[in-house]
Image (tube, rainbow, N blue to C red; front, side, top):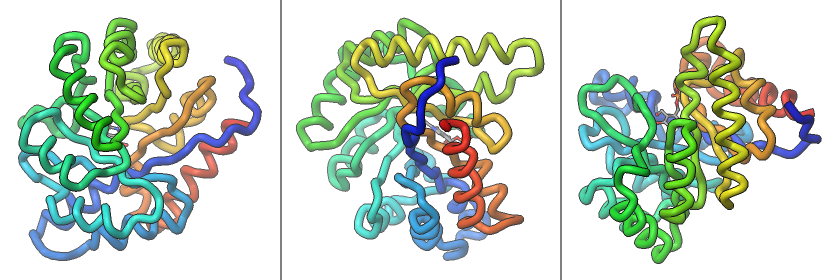
Amino acid sequence: MEPHGNTIVELGVNIDHVATLREARKGAAPDVIAAAKICELAGAHQITVHLRQDRRHIQDRDVELLSQVLTTRLNLEMAAVDEIIAIAHRIKPDSVCLVPENRAEITTEGGLDVAGQKSRLAEVVQSFHEAGVKVSMFIDPEPRQVEASAEVRADYVELHTGAYANVDGGGLMHELNRLVQSAARAINSGLIFNAGHGLTVHNLPPIASIAGLNEVNIGHSIVARAVFIGLENAVREILHVLHAARV
Ligand code: PXP
């Protein structure tokens, strides 16, 4: 891989799992808004939340409050369904990341099939652009999904790093290579390239070193580390790994 100088890669912290813990008791703790502010104070560049149709973690009120109190950016992950699109249009986050959603899944499993629904997604993208909201497509690192994302005029692609994060031994270079190739294709098509899913302090460096990377979105591993070292330290730790990989 090419060296990259010290270009800053931004960190979006996904705080869904703070809400998962809160929803385990349907109470007020832990406070999702306080968590977001701690992430910002620790240096996160963006807060990401996924307002799922089943509302299993983040609730509408969380998104509403976050849009009022964040001093960085709010990125709303969402399925491209009418109910959530209407909420996003009302709240106007800085960006939306369109993801597939399946009620039975434990977490977002695969990338969005942009190629299979281009005309509908082009309309959704246009409606968000008219509202001043940037749009990201969460896609598998496949050429046709990158091309389709450019065709529907998305601003960003977030390449799904789940297959890379979960691979055993021999397939690692293959998965990394798919990400590198798709990143280059995205940049050549005029898209901004982000990455996310399953990233940890251990597997982040090769991803952070991919040329042209703009931002990573990391959730579960930060919240899991926070149980032991605190949220502020967990964010600082991942920022340190992210930046060390770029110098
Ligand atoms: N990016 C997207 C689009 C996601 O759906 C998720 C999971 O909610 C993440 C990033 C963060 O993944 P993880 O929680 O595994 O870090």
